[in-house]
Image (cartoon, rainbow, N blue to C red; front, side, top):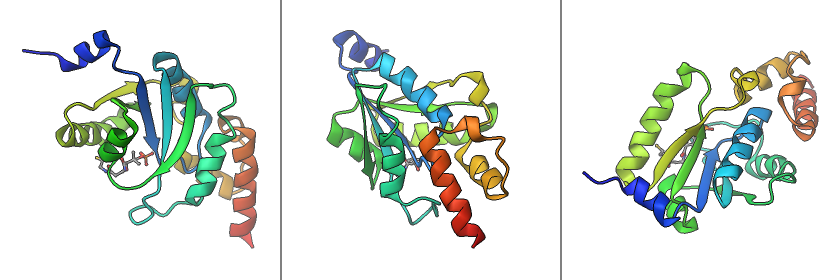
Length: 177
Ligand code: PNS
């Protein structure tokens, strides 16, 4: 039995990680996971999905990318890009050997497990690792934050960075007009 993942680690091959997602919009939970990833890998690319066909996003792709980019100040080894097509192809193009995903409650598991298995099937060399955010973000999701905001509640304001808060206010104004 061999353990290619461990050999990659010993060879120092795990330099670039991708942190993919929809980031609609980025939350403090995402940034918490990103900060953990930047301590583990030499380079972390936040990969913002541009697949508009299957999911209708509240923010367009350039906005979702900017909202992440404006929060990269503390992470000198992180960058952000939009991607389309299959994640495994994009990872190969960028020389990434690891996918980082955040795992919060058990409810995330089924979806994440399916995705990790499919990506492994498509590219057995690409390893998915799961990082747990600080427990204060266990119930933070972009989806819920958008919903709560739309109804004018501000209880979630500490769960997103200031630029996202501003963008959410703009969104609520548009939706309510
Ligand atoms: O933040 P999300 O919405 O959970 O992220 C999902 C994402 C963007 C990582 C996933 O939909 C994805 O990888 N899309 C790219 C297309 C692809 O490779 N699909 C097969 C993955 S199993």
